[in-house]
Each structure stands twice: as structure tokens, then as C-alpha cells.
Image (cartoon, helix red, strand yellow):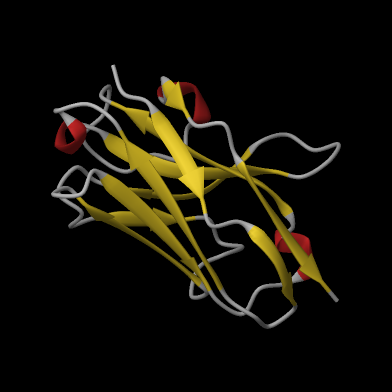
Length: 125
């Protein structure tokens, strides 16, 4: 099992940047594909980005491609989401998630078995 704790959310103006972190417990962190998802009020949770076990492969939602960067540090059991050029429509609760059921980055929410509690990101116009 793995436990995930997000941090780094906050309030930022449009065009600004934030970096989210997700710290994981457990000795087998490098065995998990990791992802970021987000959920805005009244909407379903949606995929943002995912990264392979080694960090060598990533996958992004079209809405964030070119603006967000996912990375991981297996030595620190931590993943990151660097968010640049933020827009008001990026406002949501952001969740990190982990799965051992695939070896490639996946946008499929149903594949992820472990979830953090979420961190709020608010982008003002």
C-alpha cells in the first residue's frame, strides 16, 4: 500500500505559477505509476497528467499540455506538478494518485487505487 499527501495549493492570479507536491509513504514508491487529477465544483474528476515508474515517460491532458509538467523523485518518494500560465479554468481540487496495475502512464481514473486527500488550487482572473 501507499499513502499520498498533497501540498502546494493556493490562490494565484491568472498567468501565474504553482508547484504541487505529493509525498508518498512506503518502500515501493518506484513500483507505481503516478498521476494527477483534478475536480472542479459540480464536475467529474478529470485526468491532468501521469508519469511512468522511472519517470522516463509522461502523458498529459490536452488542456494542460505545454503549461504543466509532471515529474518524480524516487529517492524522495515525491511527485511534482509544475503549473505555469495558469488560467481560471484550472481552478479545482488537485489529487495525486498511484497505481501498480499498469506500467505506462494512464489517464484512466479507474486504474488508480490510491489517492491523496487533495489540495485546492484557485486561479483568479
